Length: 228
Image (cartoon, rainbow, N blue to C red):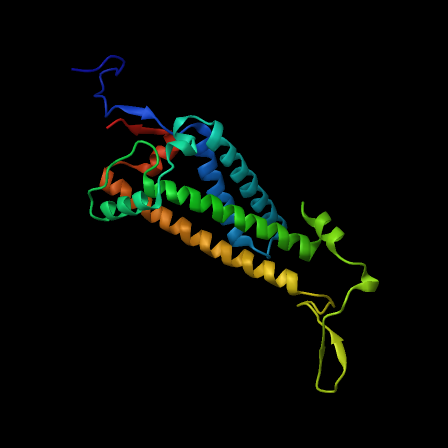
């Protein structure tokens, strides 16, 4: 016997809309932009910068959406404590974890971790871009913060002959590289940490898909999950 509207085809499990269009677009576009930025780095600076801008803008919009979006997009729907997230992970590994229609406790913790990681990576990237290229939205702040050239103390060192010389950057240009160096190290470290989070996220999605017997990646495309 067929269900109404099935045109003779046997109906599948009942599904419900869980992920709205913005959450789905945010998920895939942010992932693509992050990997573009990660893989381009300094070789294609313009592409790297615009990919970073895209990630930053999407993170801001996702935070706002977490307060005004539909039920399963709101932070209030998946705000769990760390203890609950840890218990869920233990149960997931043991193949006995409770299924959640929206974000699971571990999935929720990863959402917050990724938002923080992405935001911090973009911020340090903007700081580095301002220091090294005097460009980007933070460039004006760097310019205003810099003391006049005539009064700027030079970073100097004493060589074997006792002569004093200015510190030089990798291109042989004189200048103080301390700020740029710090921001570069922070930016690269945060990018690596965020990449690790992404890998853990993918692993968690695969494991949860097996345990709960549903394709979670597909649900982030269609927006639908089975009701039970």
